Every structure is written in structure tokens, then in C-alpha cells.
Length: 451
Image (cartoon, rainbow, N blue to C red; front, side, top):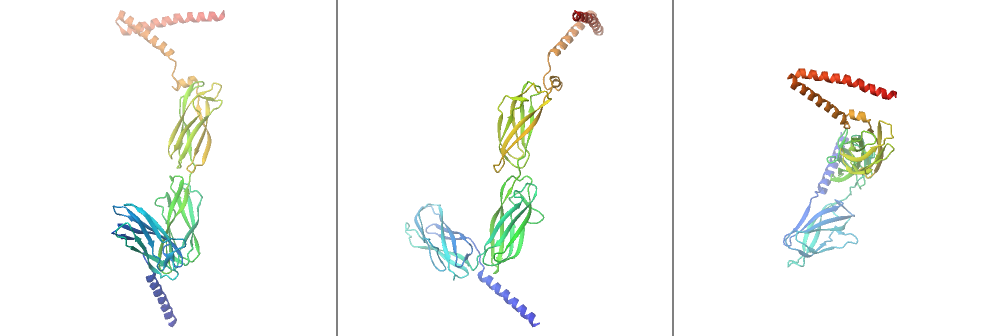
């Protein structure tokens, strides 16, 4: 019973001690500013790297100095006050001077400073001394800022970022992997690693976009895996994936780190070539052909050109190469050529040979040859299919016969005043004429052949 009591007492003491340390060492990082009303000058603390600053180490601090008045300021001098626990780093100078700071203008200044090893943990004061001799109020103004000092440095490293496959195909499952390492001087706990896919065409599979790590000692590292899938219509290019890492040190101080990971989505270009239109139907006749290039993949294509290669099956009468330019996904481009299908070919069609050159989104060049069939017909078939106009001579003969027949019926009708009888008489006369004319014609034709 006494052992159990001592154990509870010891645990309680540790918790109280940790709570006390958290209270005395916790701080809030916030934007800080100093405004000099008389001089219409504003100084903002814009950066501290690293933050919090560490005892016995150097850090960089940045300020933005802004003239928010309506008049220009000249000879603005700013000196950093070297007071414990901060001092200038080597090769740094105290004074920064702006010869002219125009109305509404802002400029930035940076210092490299050193934190004394004996600095107090928590909030410490850093002062800037500002003077503007050109104004009647030339006395030195002091702007003071709060700087948080920590005993330990917390450095989270991300490395060995890889994807499997190396280039993520749209619409297919992939894996994103990387290492998280504690490169700081003390252990950290309750680590949350969160990937932000909101503005990236990637979705996590089978899990969320977060991973939690309970504890990482100094120099420890852990491998994190994310199963992902890229959108099926994702464009081929590199993408930046924001990553946020939140963790606590052993004193309960919360730290947030933001960074980015790189991933490449890639799909090879896919172009479909077709004969879109043709005016070449028979051999030996000039005509126009139109070849289409359709980008049927998710990747954009750049600098597309098509060259029609000459073969023994046809001659090219126009330019052999046509430049089509860039083609976005689902775009459609066409190239026109004038050709003549050679009469010496005995095929019922010819193969058009084309060579296409283009580049993908990463400027990799592609060159491919394709054959596109072109149907060729005999003159009779082409006429039957109404691909070419028929001869007008036969039509003219038919029209003449019809007109003569109608005229004959009209003449008989004027005599008989009976249309039916007139038609019958005309047919009878034409029949007798044909019977009489045909044997004579055949006899003459036969006789000429015998001689």
C-alpha cells in the first residue's frame, strides 16, 4: 500500500513540475509593430529564423519600415540596441540608413544576432533606436519588440520523398512515401503530419490525409506511406503538395512547420490520326484530302506538325508539311493536302503515309509514322455511289425522246381530240418504226462485218 502511495505521489510531482515548466516557458508568437506617430513611421517585425530563438545560437530577424505619411522622410537612421541577451553576430553593423523614404514607401532591414547562453527562457526584449535628423523632432525614438527564447531547437526534416511509380499516371493507384526525422536537440511528441490535397488533383486512398506519430527521440526518423490516386483528367506537370507538421516538445510547447512536397503526374501523349475528308475517288484525278489529329489523352501536346510522305501510290501537289501548333486534351486539329492517286497502282485503295512530330508537357520530343487507308474506286462504282457526277449525254438523249414522244401524242390529239386514242396511235407508230428500222440497221451492220 505504501509503495502504491509513493508511486502516485511521484507521478503527481512529475506532472506538477511539467505543468510549472509549461506555464513559465509557453509563449504566443504574434505579429508585432511599433508606430511613431510624430514621424509617421511604422516598424513591423516580419520574420525570426529560427523561431523561437535558441540560447547560445545565432538567428536572423527582419523588420519592415514604412513611411505612412504624406511627406518624404530623409536620412532615416535605425540602430539596433545591443542589450543582454542579444548582440550583433560577427561582421554585422548596428546602423541602417535610408537616404530617402518616400511617402507610402516601405523597405526591409535584416540583422544577424546572437543569443547569450545565459538568456532567460521565455520573453526577452529587443529594441531599435530610430532617429530622423531632417525633422525638427530629431531625438531618438525607441521601438521595442518581444523575442521568445527557448532552451532547445526543434528541427523536423523531410527527406527521401519518392512516388511509386516515379511519375504518377492519371486515374491509377500510386504511393507517396517520405521520411520524417527529428533533427533537433530534444525529443518531440504528439506529431501530426497532414498533407493538403485541396488544390492538387490527387486523392488519398483507403485512409485520410493525416498520420500521427506519438514520439520521436533526437535523430529518430520514421517512414510515412500514403496510398493515392491522381484524377483521371489530371494534366501532366509537376505539382506542389503542401504539408503541415504539428508537434509538442516535452515542456508542452506547440510548434507548427509548413513545407511542400513535389510530385509529378504524367501521361504520354495520345494522338489519333484519321482521314477526315477526301475528294480523291478515282485514279489519276487531283483532289483534296483532310487528315485529322485528335488529342484523346489527358496530356497537352505542343508543337504538333504533320508531314505527308510521298510514295509510289500517289503524288503530292501541295506542301508536304503542315504545322498545327499546340493541342490541348480533347482538342481536334486538321491538315489539308492535294494529291493525285497514280494510275499505275492496281489496288482498290492506297495507304497514306504520314509522319507526326510533337512534344509533351516536359518538352520530350515524339516522332511517329502512321498509315491511313484511302479508298479508290473505278469510275463506274464512283458514279454508282454518287461520288463523281455521271455523264450528261445519256440523260440528254432520254430527254429528247420524251419530248418527241409528247409532241407526237399532241399532234394525234389535235386530229382525234381523244387523248387516250392519241397515245395509243403514237405508241403504235413508234413500235412499227422501231420494228422497221431495227432489222435494216442490223442487216447493214451484219453485212459490213462479213465484207
